[in-house]
Image (cartoon, rainbow, N blue to C red; front, side):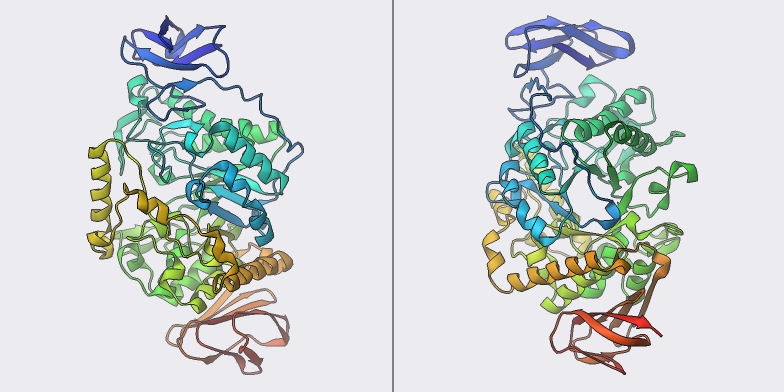
Length: 579
């Protein structure tokens, strides 16, 4: 076994194997190496810098004792895969399902998640998106404070468990995307700065010093993150990654880190003969993320569409606090449906400046559309889902618009049956001072939304985590069974109708009446009429020949020459030939 470590600032480095410490030799570029033939798979090891205490390997493939313990040697060739010839379908035809391994099942492991994959297949899901699974501190957490980025969380089942989940998903025709966090680490268990200049004071983010992507020694830092992505895709057979908060990846280089990452992933995909996707979360409203490098873009596959979410959420709930202050009208929702970005160079009152640029010429398939995700639920004071905030009728309208939009739809775990469990923010920091700081920070963070600190559950309280687990017994009970059936029928319809698979946003037409609270979405021969008012009304429809009802949220909906006669808070989907 050859141990390797990048630490250009260290004077001496030793590898610690139990009570034995062996000196390592410094080579070019600040890389230290030593060959230990007796140390094979399963051996525990750590590194000591300049005679200091042993620290986990920054590239540890396995942390069986948590973020502070030794690393373990892993042989990726031992696992027997059964997914030969697997190929994910195009993202353009995908239905994504975001899940958190720890709360998706009562057990909260990779193995337990396998038992629920058949439910997702029956629902019509094509891709599951795992919230971060890289080793994070404690036994419970969202995963966005991971520190051992190469090691699947030991509490979920470690490397073996993740491989079994991916293999089982592929066997059922499900692709697997992993959420990765490259914009910050830690803080608990984050030892990177002790090894090398992984962070730089030249740039700052909400989490402190930015990752060093463009300063001295940044070449190896960039390699650390690129090789991490390639490892997940190659050794765990993952089909892609969701890149967390890429706006916090500060890089002034001529070739942005994201472009480099996309190029290297494309090269791996070509080598392995498998399609791979990179999906960004971004607060920039910048279409360059998903444009090809030939058009001065970064070459990512798609990005989340928060503007669509915010516009839809504000219309459904009437909320105007925080960033929802920028989204207040049916006109904003219409603009999002036709162009993805509401703020495309428009002045933002929330930001106090102009924001974004138009997504001109881009397909809707470059954007993910959703009404719920981990952020938009978990970053509320009490982790309320949409089903806790709006009526059943409006919940069906929300699902209808997401699943008939020109975007790639994404559902959050339990959304499909209107799960009763909230999704709250939870942590398990061993350091009481850090735990207290996190709890206090959450309470002060929500002041902008007008939420009382007393409303915010303590993230450190194990009960906060327990409340967030899904209750699978609800599926057979009302109203959950009816909501599940609604989602299944919507997904089936989206898969059946070519017009709903068309991502051309310039072919989308939206009409609305702000005062009457109705909206009509037209996508070729398909018309989606929504009555968001609290009373029945006739919603005018485009001139059509022989309109046919494909799906309706209420049986009382009727279609006449004058339009759709719709009960309060209802939706109907029609198909007809145009005159």
